Amino acid sequence: MRLGVFSFMVCGGGCVASTVFAGDWEHSDDFELGYQGSYVFEARTLSRNRPYASAAHRTSVYSEESPTRWRLDASLRGWVDVRGDLENEVQPELDVRELSLSRADDYTDIRLGLQQIAWGETFGVPIADVVNPRDLRDPLFLEMDWVRRPTWTANVQVMVESLRLQAVATPLPRNNELPERGSAYDPFPPVLKGVEVEPQREFSLGRFGRDGEYGGRLGYLFDFGLDVGLLYFFHWNRVPVYELAMQGGRPVVVPFQDRIHTAGITVSMAFEDWVLRGDGVMHGNVPWMTRDLQGTRRIDYLQAIVGVDRTTESGWTLGAQFHIDYRGDRMLTWGSGRIQKSLWDGDLEPQIFAYIGVDNTDRWVQPRIDWHVLSLWTLSVRADLVWGTTGDRAGDLGFIDGRHRVMMWTSLRL
Image (cartoon, rainbow, N blue to C red):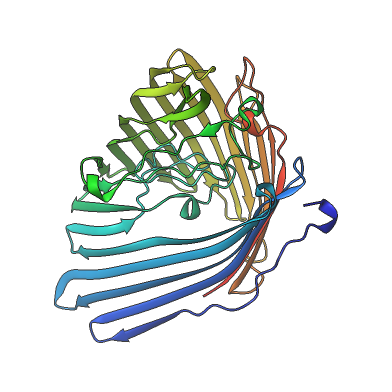
């Protein structure tokens, strides 16, 4: 779609939310209407053109005489995407975001059903959030409530004073959603244009439990404010490794997926207006793609992020992080930062996020303004400026080098 006829659609309609108390029952409902649109300048096309609606319901059952509380959570989001980078193909989608039943008391919290589980402490690149796969069709969109793909999971937590134990089991995993072929964020090089890419592994009900993922987290909050978590998860490699094969005399790109072990640590500590954060994870014996797609090698993959945030009385939020990746015999480092200012009693929030390679060519800068126009209406405008290479000093952004874009997001909710 040409820039001259490019336009964003502003959300119309309304949202309703209410809470009803009926003795020992509590009900709440939330509704939201909105629109997300993004324009990629290099391709001169809309990479996101999405009016959407979402609804959430919560029912809690409790008694004043007992610490036990039951809760049902259900959330649904639907949209229609008409994207110029996919030849204006109409893509309707209905996504159940949550459908879970939980029982909690003073010492335990047991939740069964479709849910999201967040383990990380750092911002921008959530390396410790390993339980849920992600929707990576837009790699620059990091709103985790949209990016995490909920899974059917048994989630059991036990709290004993400052100690927290958590066990997680997902008998029916899900894959990452990867960028579509021919889209603005297609990760395959032009030389593979027209080559068939086989779909990822299908996790069927017939293999319920046999393909399962499981793990847990142990956390402890020290008296002086240090919060430490140790985690472990046995799961499928989220981003498949691709191999080039010949089938019936024609080339085909075949995904390779295998289960791997991930262990890690998360730390955070707050004092006065400062917060120290850190995440570190080790993925053992990970399948890794070769440059020529000829076979798969195995590596131990270590990721670590350490950072600090400060929030001032004048409304400034400042954050800085240092990222390290050890990928077999190669190390990559980045620095990231975020500056945000709260204006007009929080109604206007300009901010800027930057992610810069130290020993590589990655550059990503995202200026953004969030405006809470009314108590129910929010308007957000952001830009993503991206640079990278695929040569010797390549980082992770080379496949989207120069695909700068602007995005608008508006929502109306209660």
